[in-house]
Image 1 (cartoon, one colour):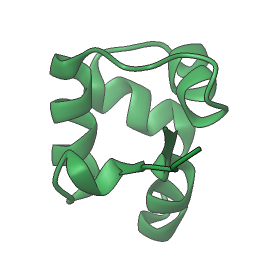
Image 2: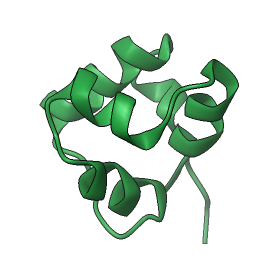
Image 3: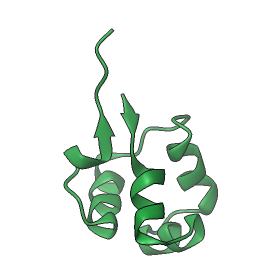
Image 4: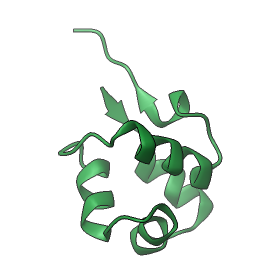
Length: 65
């Protein structure tokens, strides 16, 4: 499962730092999520979706193997 968080964040013109502050996490956490090194908790996924103005499903891209 990949995510579209970087793309959505850039479309809104906000930095990793701004997104992190709005979601109550560190910039490093946002960076790790964007680079698919960390999967957000469900609570964080809802916060990210709210800030990025999408549904939780809209944050992720599902790939079949």
